[in-house]
Image (cartoon, rainbow over all chains, first blue to last red; front, side, top):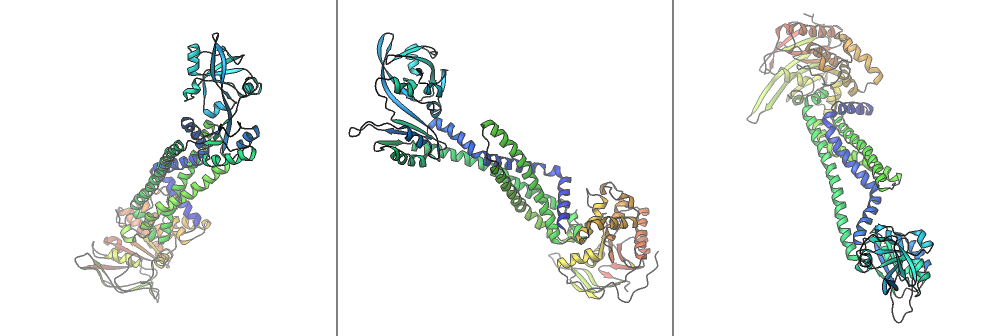
Length: 391
Length: 234
């Protein structure tokens, strides 16, 4: 039997009985579409997933502190050290922070405030949002503006309300305008603090501000170990790192990774199950086809079809089914990828999609052959006389 | 009734001492007992007998659809009873045509598609197929039904399409198992007329299995069969 005849006859058979096959084709198509969207968007989804989980557990944040030790002079992170750390592969962002106790006045009485001097990355780094008002950004840091953001507890203790935007506060003989109240700090001391731009604090505070803390956020939790390992070397290359303390929430990281692994595992398991069920569907439907077409098989053998012709026809029909399912799955997958990309705001590399396309086609062929082989062999081995007499 | 054709020197098929025995678990059941038969090109032979006499089994063995238990089966003088499965299939598609009782057409297919299959298995070029299919259909007066769905044909038309399909590969022997069994008298005679036209060309033989004396009467030779024994030989 010629190849073009084989394909034409098999395709015709599948198209004419499409209603019988539609359920199986859709099941496999959904599995393929799921695989393509997970595989193509996996990295981007993982980054977003990491961010969300990291905000909860802070597991992708590495806290670097230049500790005060009596035998060492007070040190802080140099700007070229920070820039070099930002260039370490796997680092998403870095934020330099200084803590200080600053004297101020409140209702005419002297008061000692906890002040956190932060750069523009701090909010995003910690996943913080304004409860009221706004949080200052790059412009305020560059222009050294005298702006302040209050922690919720401090706002309540000073003003008895969250609605404090527009009010003022005296710090170290300077008046600072309060622009908002921040929430999501998950640290009681920080909730009692005032946040000011790092540059403003450096310039205006009478006591020298020591920027001895550097928070580093990694792109994914897989990057955390290697970034944590690289930081001391990078710091050492630019300044003394004798009193450097690198802190990672290893326990939380392990826990979050374990949770994520199981989520990922169950997602893949769900898609694999769909595909296996699809394969079993093809197997089942082909077995049924062999049974219902027994007379046809006998008739074709009487016409001179060889065993291999019958085997090839049933196998090609199974392949047509799985390839049709893969085609529908690829189209669905592409639509899903576009929608996910639009939703997440990211666009995966086009090559990744084509890799998926090839994998899906190879998989479809394997599924078609795997599920269709046994029924095809059964059909090919059928005895002509019993087949032609089959009722 | 057609006139017996003048036998050529070598018979097309020669069956000698052919037996077929089935084992039903309790013992051996003989279905064919030392059957001897010669059929020449241009002949139409009727194998006639009651149900269970073994006539269909004989037809299947002659069509290489079933192996005999013992005996010799020669085709133009060459022993063919020991051919392998692939060789048997090749033999069937090149030399034999089958017409079954149940008007076995491929459902959900057109008349053209039904007749195309023997040509596909034979490896006939695509452009050669339409004229050959049309030629076969014209022999049974169904040239105008080329693209009709097989499901929509009447019983008589279906059987005539089955005859055309048996003819499309230009076989030397047509084996017909009760070809008129499910047809009314008028359509049955129409099918027989087609068989008579086929053997009139002198290059094909037809063996018909039937229990209808009217059908058998139209054949060149009648071989009665009873309990696996074939009478009226040669």
